[in-house]
Image 1 (cartoon, rainbow, N blue to C red):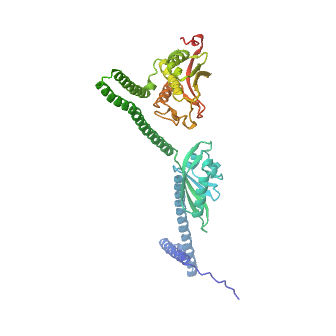
Image 2: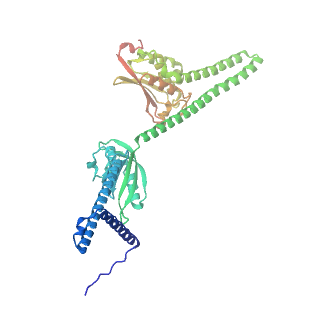
Amino acid sequence: MTIRCKETPLNKEDKMAQERNRARASELRKRAEITLAEAPQAIRTMVPADTQKLIHELNVHQIELEMQNAELRRVQLELQEARDKYLNLYDFAPTGYFTLDHNSLIVDVNLAGSELLGSEKHRLIGAQFNSSISPDSQDAFYFHYREMLKTGIKGNCELKMLKADGTPFHAQVISMAVPEKDANINQCRTAVIDITERKRAEEAQERLRQQLQAKVSELETFSYGIAHDLRSPLVSIEGFSRLLQDDMLNQDTEKVQEDIRLLESGVRKMQQFLNRTLEYSRAGYQIKLAKNVSFGKIVNEAIAEFNGQISSIGAAVSRADKFPRVYADKVRIAEVLTNLIQNSINYRDKTVPLKIEIGYRLSEGEVVFFVRDNGTGIEKSETEKVFDLFYRGSTEGEGSGAGLAIVKKITEAHGGRIWVQEGQSGKGTTMCFTLPKQGGTNKGDNNGKD
């Protein structure tokens, strides 16, 4: 008894494939018959009919095989050409292409990808793709890759990556899942595009936008400062002009003279303010008379200029015994020093006698000068802002707010810098600025002589 296995029923796709194979075999048979008919063999008339039929079948079969081989060679050649074309497109594409497994190990990479990471292709295969990602972008890649494997949906993100030598670059990463026959996702293809130049352009554009915004803000502050500082003397001039008219009608000579004096005072304030505003705009371009000068003499002259104010408020000013000579524009540096002394007077603590100390310390190639006081001090949050044009801090005091901005420009024009050393409100202020050192201390500086 013969046991026959139960045949598995064919599905629709298998049946269609079977029909295509039968049609292809039938077509191949017809072509072989035609070929044999066009080239009859001599043996056909020399053998019995059965043998002749067998030989005919063999000849047809041989021709079928030759045709199949020729077709296979043609298909193989086309496949080879297509493969070479694909490899050329893959390897020489301007974008880096990576094939990664589910653990983000590199399975394959094109030449552009190896050049992008600065490593040879065979060294990258089997390596972790994560090792080429900057630590601060690891989390972004992890979430990008996990989401892509989970959903199978193409995704992209921007990462900071590293070449083999540690050189950083910005990249746009686009990943697409590669489903297997069982619909599981074990691999993905990832494109890496270098966007460093684009990021630099964006950053430059953002810096330009911020600079423009800062300029607009500075212009607004400048306009506000001018309006604020001109309003007060203008109001005074207007008021005293009316009083002057009344006093002239009353022929009160003494009162007229007082009104005129007050008018002149208001005009002088406006002139001083306008001069300081102009000075700020050109301070960086007027350092033309720089030479070897005695800083001690500048200090003596500055202190003498404030003798009246110092005496009236009961202040005490001390200075170093000797000062080094410096390379500077004497007039401009005198303005720096007088501004700092004036600020100490303006922002003094009126509950205690004002003390001002002027000194210095030597540093490499420069001298650090300081003006220290026991005034109201400067809040730490304001130590940088005090040098902005028209900035008025939270502490009470007089002044237009332009002085320190001018001082900063003059100092920087000399190749120096200025800063607030102590920024603790209520404990005084130490303003420091530097100048290039020229020569050493000498006896002439003791008494302020050049």
